Length: 482
Image (cartoon, rainbow, N blue to C red; front, side, top):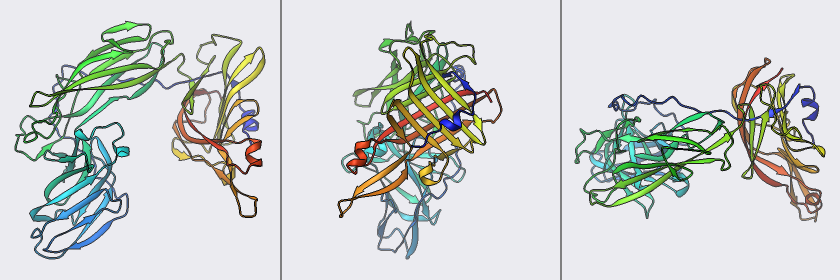
């Protein structure tokens, strides 16, 4: 199996560390809540268009992906009209799935037509169907919510009625996630967390069908979204932050896990000066929702914050197991244990950027958990790595111990009718991003990668078995020496 050792030996050897600090400036709590609707650029075509002709007797048309159905009743059109559904990139706030441009744009109907969005559990992920609605974009780029969106949790649909064609999308009126949903901090560093959603425009009445989306700031009390109101009296519509906690301890709190201070929809977590025994640290916000009938429901949203000891690092996860490496020496930090420490080779040579991270031991002498990564023609971009099995020069390899190798290049083996084995040389899919890159010395290089690598064994070849896949994910922030 080809490795990157020959390349990495041309680069200066240093000793390694890992992670990009995420932090935010605290918002001005005295600033008033914005009343300006959110404006974005229009979506661009992003899929196959669906075409049809519908006359005065009515009919329906479904998007090519099956996720939107337009139903036009009898009498809505005076003559046969060619209509189309064009999937577009979804620029809506808190959007889900594709957006759709209904054409001819601006077409109006004498009777309301029905738009039915279909959703799946996979599309929702951790969101709740109770918080779905349909939104539309006006000509000025502003977004409006259809307050009378109807959710059918059995059919898994969201439906509205409209008398015009424009750009439409499925979205959520509130997002029960923390921003950031996860973070990695160096010891002593801080990160601000906040809830996101949309406030209700107080000028909107209970009978209105359309309301502008206004982003929530970190100010004020409660978390009242633009949400459908009567006649559905049981619909949850008022959300309040009940409590913030850090590993179960209510804020404000300060202990060996760090400190947490909170104010309504925002909180600031500060990492301790020593790596905590429980890592990552769980910062949780507890919310309480209520409806006009007096019913209540509770929700919990958590952000996991990983604390590391250096701002120069490689963080690696293989099948859920974490490995961390720190770039000691270049930033004045020394290994806490000189007999067992992480090491890195990092640099650019002949137009190729390479990293080798490993755990070195002096007793017994050796290396384990070796990660080798080469990015050919590096630049600040995102692309899929291409290994030598597909005539590329990129490399990704993980060697957890002697004789065990996971690689981006692998051989697919398929038994054939002649009791033989058909072979196909493949390259697994790994997406890699270089956030910052420069070919100079003493510069910071940072990036991210994720995908699959494959573990091969001699018995796999003997049994005509394809190597086993492993999920790999990693982040790095390193100082390039030369």
